[in-house]
Amino acid sequence: MAAEGQTVATSGLTDFTQSAIGRKLFLMLGVAAVVAVMAGVWMWSQKPDYRVLFSNFSDRDGGAIVASLQQMNVPYKYAEGGGAILVPADQVHDIRLKLAAQGLPKGGNVGFELMENQKLGTSQFLEQVNFQRALEGELAQTIQAVSAVQAARVHLALPKASVFVRDQQKPTASVLLNLEPGRALDPGQVSAIVHLVASSVPDLTPGNVTIVDQNGNLLSDTNKKLANNGLDPSQLKYVQELQQDVAKRIESIITPIVGANNVHAEVTADVDFSHSEQAAETYKPNGTPDAATMRSQQTSETLNDNGNASGIPGALSNQPPAPATAPITAPAAPAPAANTPVSAANTAASTAATSSTPPAVVHKDATINYEVDKTIRYIQQPMGGLKRLSVAVVVNYKQVTDKKGQIKNVPLTDAEKAQISDLVKEAMGYDQARGDTLNVVNSPFAATKEIIPEVPLWKQPDNIQLAKDIGRYIIALIALLFLYKKFLKPLLEKFSQMSHKRHHTADDEEEKDEDEGSEVHLSGHGKSGEHTPYPGGAYQKNLDMAKQIAKDNPKVVANVVKAWVNNE
Image 1 (spheres, rainbow, N blue to C red):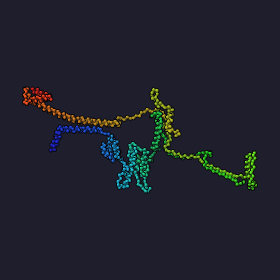
Image 2: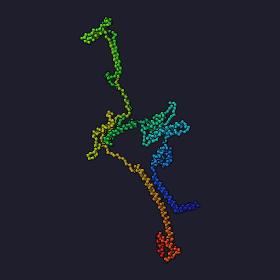
Image 3: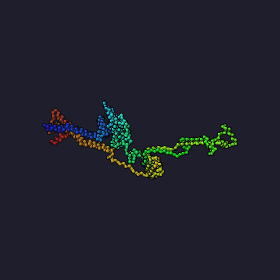
């Protein structure tokens, strides 16, 4: 029974497919399928170009971004193993702004917004932990603002406060930095991050902050070994910048004279990075009293007038003096005569006094102290002092046009060389006492052209993208032509043939009916050619019909006449 039912169903399906309605239905389905495939190929060739929306995001942010894209009906796809989300290139900026308005991506670090969701009944320990997490997240987000830092993570060790001074501990911090590819932090930037973290946590000193990069290199080590020449990286950088600055100044002042690319300077700087202090005390020779400054003066004077024995040694001089016989009030001495000289009068008076007054002993002592002329000098030599400069300058030959209009390279004259040397000395700060040296050479430059390797056409990014676009359009066109030639065109031709065949079949049936009617009507004529009139005017009616048929379908009449001739 099952086999018979299957046979009946198969025969029914076959009969339906062979019927006119079944053929039309399957033909329409085939045309629709081919058109759908062609539309799909065309849409594939017109697919939009995708660009990176976000990359290197956390799983939580990725889920939130995908959910927002689905709500906005934005097509997206993954790349780089799920590490990036791609969207159509013409919508990248709009979608970024819309997601930024929603606070996406939030990043893996949680800041002080964690404190906004505190639950009722939270313990003090949990509050402290949440505060520490929030502080770590805020510090990490701040450090990530540095251009060379891709991601950062901060760990804080905050000890509990104690009332005992001896039990108090200082907080410490550890920072892990994930730097951008090909980027590095210089010591100044590392020091800035250290002080940033230390200033954000109470009682945290910069020495208790440790910074490590993603490769495990300790960046915050302040006890780094110096280089082989005894200079640390900052000192080497200072020397290089000094040399480059002097060379740039020399080239900038010589270039307007000799032209661009016609002068080259190299500088070697000997920098003293030693830190020295010196104290000197200098005494000058004694000068004249008039030029010296008096500091103190002491004068001592002794007068001895007690009448001690004096005079010529002997008996008379050792005897006491005799009592005075002169009156207490002595008469005034007579005035000297007018012609007596003053010196004679004074001599007489002094002789009289000497003879009457015993001699007195006077002792004088004088001590004068002058300031000592001395100089005390304290010299403190800072690091980075320039000890010596060595400069070498090469100048190209100058170009001169001769009478024939040809350009020739001519060396500089001695005056031009001296002028260039003087300018270089002024630009470099030449000091002969310091031991600076300068060497200016005038020599023709080698005519070398910079050879830029030409990138092949098939390796240029623009051409690669253009080739991809052209290939995509060519593949789409080939696919469309293949579908049209192999499927759509045969179906359309078959449909057209079926419609044409059906039309011809109807015409043939109509012509056959007309031929049979004509033969019946025209067979009323006798073989002898005699006319047998039909009653009621039937003959005239048939004649008019035959004329109309001959007029409308002369082919049919010709066939009838031909048949008659053949029968005779």
